[in-house]
Image (tube, rainbow, N blue to C red; front, side, top):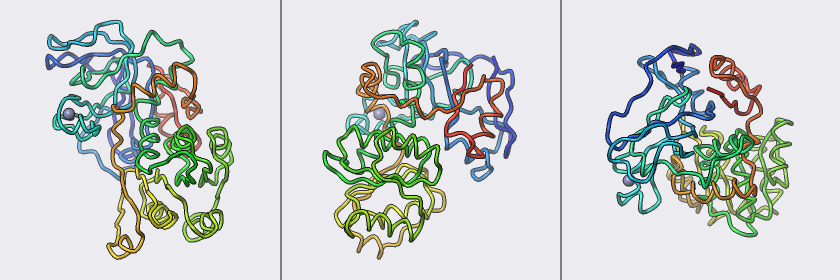
Length: 338
Ligand SMILES: [Zn+2]
């Protein structure tokens, strides 16, 4: 089968690889319906997070169960399923507490930018949809595998509630879906930080009420002005740089919450600054598995359309174009058809 392999900085190739096989009795093999490129795939692609050997890429997926191992109890071939980028048993104490991305038996799921994928701990990881989805639902269902679940976690970790004033740092797919999540959770005001007109448009469609184009000091000033000098109740940090993290910590009101989901690169927080900020900080790799049942329901009832973040689509054999378009910020998120 054709599989996406990263060889080194900006050297992404599509190659023939062996089809994945059941290795453990708890595995499933799924036939990918659609996959995509993640913002976090761009870190190794840019060489900022170097890969030691050729690496199969892709960790966002949905598709049809093709085969299951002998110990798999709840799934059978033919079911349409979605899973998270971390496989989890869904039975250990951390899973029970809703932190499946910290599962004691977690395993990263890689190689989803391909037609077939091996998913470990299938019973705990994969959630079936109520029935076979129609084609138009696929982008939204795919988004639940990572970006929508991550945006939802950002809003959850930032304690977004009915009537909250929310600021969202980052206008990538996760930031945009953080806006959608805040809207569904009943936020009254949602301030999107974005300087790209096309992204501002989606931000507004998802529920942003205000747009702030400034960054750094000026951006913090604008949030303060917009909140009568108080600061936001909740800030969603969806980038992962020092600037974006400080933007978040300094835009929140005393006693407010920062939900941070951007994978940090070179972020350092100073104790004294944190001490005087009076801020709740919660974040990390989103426990997407916890949210899948509810989010699948919302997509099937057509209450949300998170698939709108895919503004481009390419066939798998042209995956290099997808990486280039996202690297150059010509696309928000690119959908791949195997
Ligand atoms: Zn677990």
